[in-house]
Length: 100
Image 1 (cartoon, rainbow, N blue to C red):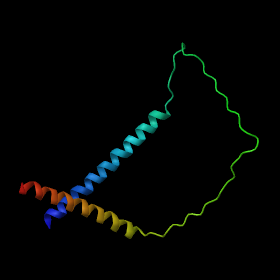
Image 2 (image 1 turned 180 degrees about the vertical axis):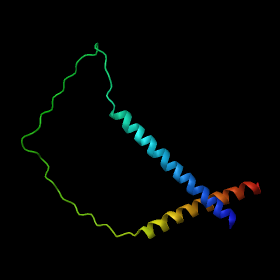
Image 3 (image 1 turned 90 degrees about the horizontal axis):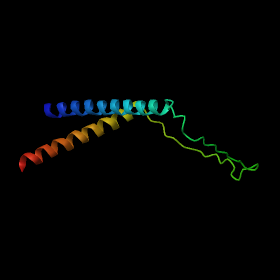
Image 4 (image 1 turned 90 degrees about the vertical axis):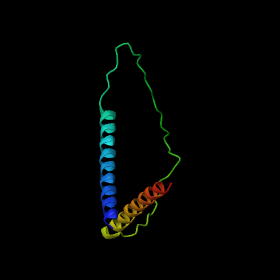
């Protein structure tokens, strides 16, 4: 049981690190995309134009989305189940390697 607790703790830490890295990469990508790039003076000037029709051909179609109420306890339980399943899978793979 102690082994499962250690694996569960490790998986939680791994998931938190992965989420942190993903957030940092997304923030970095957004920041680099938002920065102004400089162009050389020798670059040719490009002009574009767009003409819009006076009468659009598509109307607005409202859609209803039905959402179910979910409690934080249920979400927490689902996350815990996923972490436990991952830990069990890692544990099984570890045991399989030991048998070979």
